Image 1 (tube, rainbow, N blue to C red):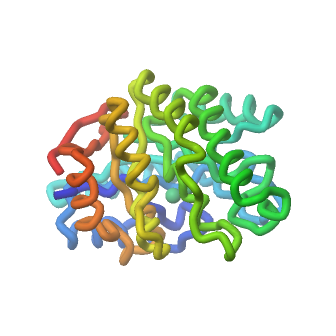
Image 2: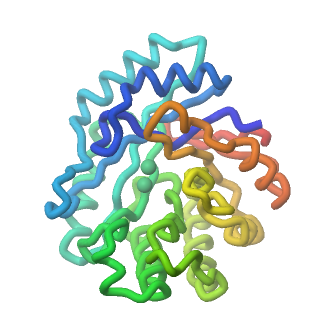
Length: 274
Ligand SMILES: [Zn+2]
Ligand SMILES: [Zn+2]
C-alpha cells in the first residue's frame, strides 16, 4: 500500500490556490504517513506567459517547518520543491547557479527535476506544436530530459517523464513509445548510475490517459535496467487530488514486478513495501 504522496502543489505555486494546511489535512484523512509538498520553482520562466512559477523560499520554508510541527504525530510532512530545469544554452548556466544556491542555502528533503519549458516555450501551449510535428515535439522534450540530467546534479528524481503526451495536438492521441526506447535507455542508465531515480506521477490517470507517467512499458524498462528509486506522487493542485488513483498505481507497479517505492528525508532514500 502506498503511504506517501511525493508530488503536490499549494498556493506557493502560481497554478494553485490551495492553502498548504488543506493538503496536509486531506493527506491525513486519507491515511497517508508521508506528504511532501513540492511547489513550482521555475527560474527564468518565459515572461510571455505572465505567470512566474517562483516563490519566496524563506517564507515557504518557515511555513512548512511550522506545519511539520503542528501535524507531528499525525503525518510526516516533508519539504520539497519541483525545479523547472532548462537546457537552452543561455538559460542553463544561470539556472544551474540559482538552483545550486537554493539547495545550499535551505534544507530540503526532496527535489524533483522536471522539464516544463524548452526552446523558451511551455509546450502546454499550441505555439510549441506549430513548430513541431507530434513525433519531433516529443523527441525534443525527451532529449531535453537527457541533457538536464547531465547538467543538473541537485535533484533526486526526474518528474513526469512523458507528461507532454497530455498536450499533443487533439488529432494525436498517444505517442509511439518504441521510437524513443534507445533514448529512454540512456536516460535510465544515467539516472541509475548517478543513484537517482524517477517518479510515478498519477496525474496521467486524472487527465483520462490509460496510464500514469511514465507509461508502464517505460517503467518496466527502468526496472529491467536496475532502476529501484521510484517515488509516487499525484501532482495534486487541490486537496481532492491527493493520492489520486493510488490503488490502481500500486497494482500496476506490483504487476510490473516492483516491490518497493521510495520516500526521501533529508535527500536520503528510504524504501517502503508496495
Ligand atoms: Zn511538473
Ligand atoms: Zn508538479
